[in-house]
Image 1 (tube, rainbow, N blue to C red):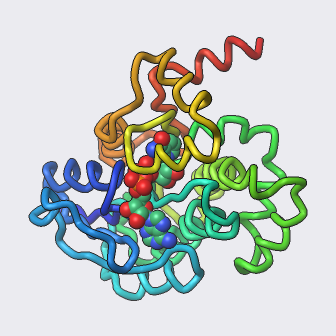
Image 2 (image 1 turned 45 degrees about the vertical axis):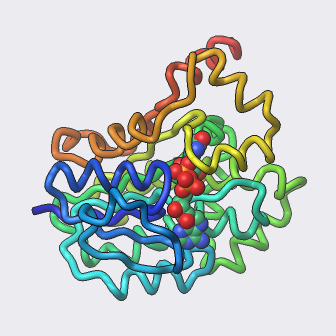
Length: 260
Ligand code: NAI
């Protein structure tokens, strides 16, 4: 069977992705914070649990050390919102995915895939490719933090900065074949009904969060996003690489038409 690694598996999108992939026959290895509660529904779905704090560079290193290959799918899903200090946001949402993808390179199966959960907040990645590339090529986390600290308001913008950069990272991996044979894609949800949504309300205001759902008719469910992740990670998507797939009920299309 296939082995899938899902970060942030204990809640929200990660939990539903774990359940879906296990249901499709994958051996799922879940990564989350030490002490994170596992939903009862996942007790049978999980082949192995790895505790790691992905807000520090030691986290991805510890995950890679505890993993045997071959890994067929890496889902970089763990994330925090800008209610957290910006270094934590850049660590969990950008630097940990960046590092984990590269640390797992020797353990990937021949036709492996990485799917990283970006966000509609990263929709304007084309405008900031240079910044994303600088962060992605920063030697270590301190160097990346020093670059980010030069932004005019990094605490306000950290989430978008991180999500824009993971989209650029997937494109770069796909184009430069940094990891040979690896397909790299991102999914970009709009608002999703998970515990994190409360943090987005606190960070962005209720109006911004509910406005999107009011237009679309509802928030996404975690299953809406899990289905897109599972597809991009499957052999059905064998010829798809370097793509950001919005999963937002069409809200991104509205933003696009309003910008014209
Ligand atoms: P959630 O809060 O339900 O789940 C996130 C998981 O990541 C949790 O299990 C948490 O323990 C884990 N995590 C957080 N920090 C960690 C750390 N330092 N080390 C290890 N694990 C850590 O959130 P949700 O909504 O399921 O988010 C999943 C992904 O979806 C995130 O990357 C988020 O940015 C993205 N997203 C979510 C949206 C939403 O509206 N909920 C919208 C767009 C993107």
